[in-house]
Length: 258
Image (tube, rainbow, N blue to C red; front, side, top):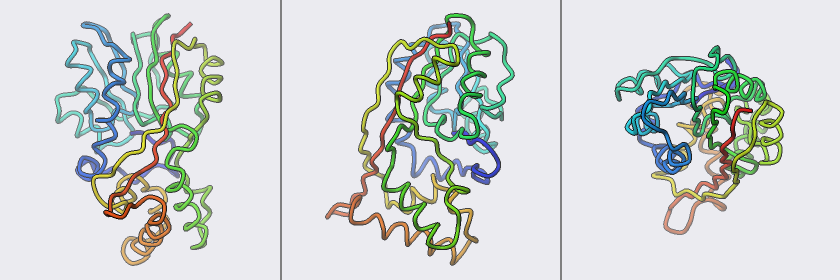
């Protein structure tokens, strides 16, 4: 996953923690690789490659894949899988018409400084007719979690607008941005994906909500914030058996560079 700037970016991801508590993120998006339909010999950019699970799956189909992510820890983890990967910012792609496709999963919603700049960079990187295939958080994604993080931060004297690292646009908004950026839409969808978490929601918060948690000192203050957010979420997201369900909403598309 990639973040957009030093304010909203986690200090860095913990790749081991991510593998334990958020492996469902790439696993539930494996069908996105089928949307991409990589072919042998194609050159493909995986934007926000994370620890390289899906990058590796694309390479297994014979494509030549380069992973880019802002997290050095994730890039190291991807390289450990045998994936070619480099540290880079999605807002500052410097490639010129050298990829047949750009792929991205669960990363675009972290690139909040200027989403249109990300789209322009992708367009520059693609050859004419190249495809952009991606999935990320759409409008309403993790809405109760998002609200609890913001509300509890505000209750503790922090400005949630300064902490919030996510951009969850509507399908219509993002399709308009793609078309303005020189793409034609091939297919699109926005769908709910209620996701059972592999453990307690506090693990999710500690793994995926770093920019909010970093507003509180490590130790008692941060633990109290996580506990308070968790308490806000119990009535809505935790069932009688103790199973936590995260209400994901995903926006998925395939677009072609004009």
